[in-house]
Image (cartoon, rainbow, N blue to C red; front, side, top):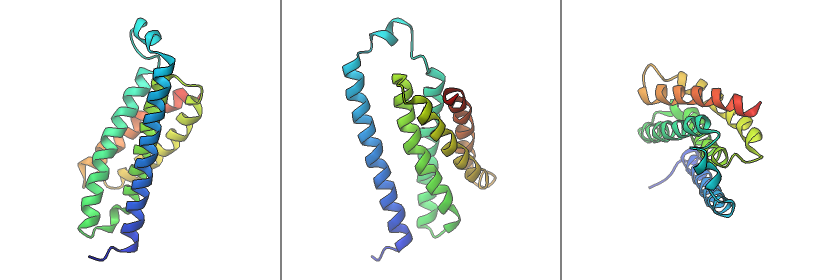
Length: 155
């Protein structure tokens, strides 16, 4: 089976993104264990819960959108190429954002600014397909909600 160069690049990009997400998750878990969780537990939740929830929604919807895009690309529909790239990027960034927001880490404002940009681009790309693909609409809506919370955190 011969793989087209564009498909190979997309797969490599996805695998790199997944590796980055995994590394970030492992690092954040180790950091959280070192820092302890008593502070958040005694106060009834994370100080950035709205951002955590928005990032989680974005991750969930982007994951579904990305899988849908891969199915369409595999069927030869190249119109979803840009959507695949933006969903893949937002998936990686918002996964990291969710973890950093849970820690209320010092780098949160900078990462929220990056996530804001990524969410806006993904939303714009998914809006192009929302009338035909409901998963794209859902992803765009989740990105819009996350962008609102990112803007608050980036300020």
